[in-house]
Length: 416
Image (tube, rainbow, N blue to C red; front, top):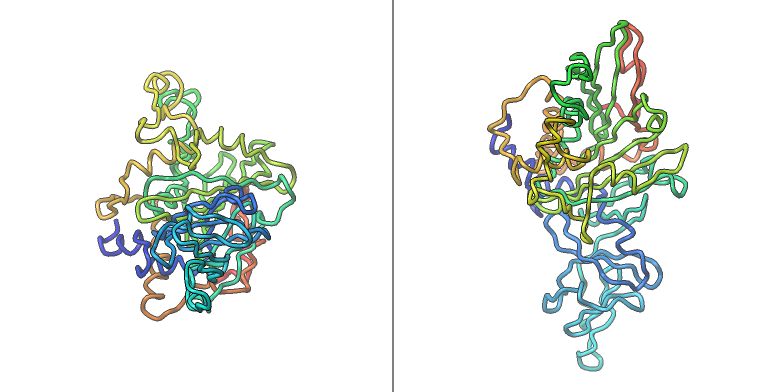
């Protein structure tokens, strides 16, 4: 379990909180590029880390991300006109460019210099992998951008999508770190269908965690009947990512990987962003969304949610599947959202299968405390030498007596 005090540190992300300040030291996936695809198009309201923002693509194709409230009288800039390389407030016509510079104050007297003294809060943006990324930390400390392998793939080989998850970001991250749940929550047969039930050795995985500069990686280790060991190595970069191994038992999935980012909207809701990618062949985003069981509204919120009790089918549970829930992502969201908007970790009773979850909590909380106490940013945010393109997940079968760390050695530039 986690103390009440440490749970507060882990979960609170607004400006001025230890975790909020830590996450602001990283480049953050803010919204999908498709949301601001059109130059001079409709501005988009965005909530990140408890801050209300507005995004827009200007006449030159640059993407701005500004505080939503106009610096003049605090009306929403999302109501404004996006044209001629700036967004103009609907209330008094004050206009701001993507860098927050005030370009015009039309109702002010002739010769007024007010616009030279006013700025809108603006965050820098980078467009990669179908996503608009932003940096919300201190201005002079712009960190190196993490050029993950999937962010610069050929067209069609990487697809991004997002869905709102109605709980604190830490619960969502912990759900994806947890390897033990995969053979239980996601099983496609009834629990007592003995003829199709996986042998218990495949449910009971040993866990080994290795801390790295970028965060951590861990192996789920399962003994095989011939003495070899099956290892699934998942990558967990700070502050809220997971890179999931491919499924080598399926020819189609054997080269297909999945990366998650669980971006805090605020303390009680999260943007679950996913990249579905394959260096060898194009991928189909629509298939992944269908596989996840998602049915989204125009604001990327689930129509199948706690309000519909996730469309759980008790008849299906008796006849076909264990969960009675259709879709991998619906299943994942159901078990973490029903923990409450912010889980009470002081009431948990943890087991051996929670080792990776515990390790991630400790790394993140320790980093947040170090930043608050000494101003030290973690290597994951500041080290330009981390080889992001080489940090990949893997599924391997290990010969008897060989460890996963020998089979998949850590790059020296990632070692702590």
